[in-house]
Length: 450
Ligand SMILES: C[S@@+](CC[C@H](N)C(=O)[O-])C[C@H]1O[C@@H](n2cnc3c(N)ncnc32)[C@H](O)[C@@H]1O
Image (tube, rainbow, N blue to C red; front, top):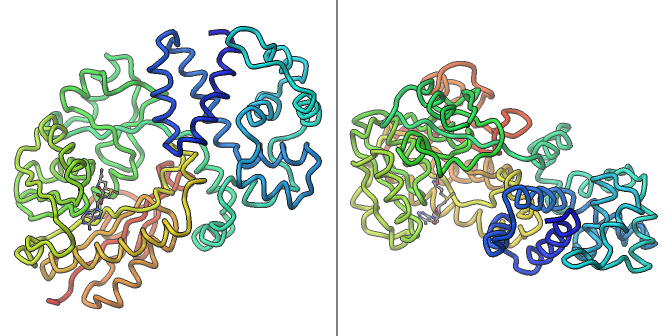
């Protein structure tokens, strides 16, 4: 593909992502798969440009509105509604992100076959007006500069305080690929690192998670022998830490109540050496079904999988106080994963957040009776919003005073060992603090029978 044809593809894709309201990576994958003429370099170049524009969406929109002569307030309103349209967005990105001169942008947009159409007079005026401007500008309101919806700023201020800009900048960077070495197949992280190197993948141990390795660059791990043989799973270090803090051990009874496709169940099975009782629950049969082949590949043969009918499923009563550990990896807004899905930030609504918090309360109430006295309930989300994290734990404790949060540094010392990147009743992992996805974990001990 010529550089201009790649730009035309980026414009088409940004239009589809906006119109389809589906995750950007899925839209890009389907688009490139349907166009066999796109080589791997074309795919990578187009993907990089699409994601760069999505990461700068509010600022690009603000500039397009400003260059069109709109007032500061109008520019601010436009920045949130993405009124610019994909072509304007890409023209602005070529100037503000790539630093291209207006003549070069006009040269790319020459109306040739498969190229973007020639610049209209208003488009030429836009690129002329933006030339030499910085992407981030002091007159942009905070939420535009940090690329999050304005209504979320108070929540982020609560959790990040003075570090808000630094934290949100890190949450808008590209994420690395982390793998979890599966001790059920190959207990040595070094041996797996060597096997990955044989397949052209450079990996180094993750700073915190005991079984984690981080790849240098992005690679299609799932096509490699170490993945096919079950030696590794793709899992961000934050998720690995959350699973490790459960403290699952051989011969315990452990329940993963929101098991989904089994990401954390696999880690728990590894910590339990596939011995004891490990139950993976979910209300979504299709998702839990996807855990089956993954568990088989990982050599985790003893996991019981069970689809819950609803929060009153009789299985829950029948298993009251049956578990040493219950993990609630709750459904949430996914704010902590915004590095990987930059478009998701503009799709979250206040109503969706309220639905998440209601469901989180419900699942915690469903999970609490399963914990035996002296056992632990571990609450985790891949969110950074206090409404889904500390607020949920505080509300839970009012309803269930028999559950007491354990100091996270003690739990860390007991499970992972080494220096804990936090202290107190809960742990918040962030891209800026720990170089991981955003994650929240609280470990509560049940002191008495309900
Ligand atoms: C964050 S995802 C779990 C991810 C999974 N633990 C992993 O590590 O891959 C949350 C899951 O909770 C499930 N869920 C939603 N409501 C539930 C409920 N009432 N009881 C159990 N699971 C529920 C969803 O279907 C979803 O799979």
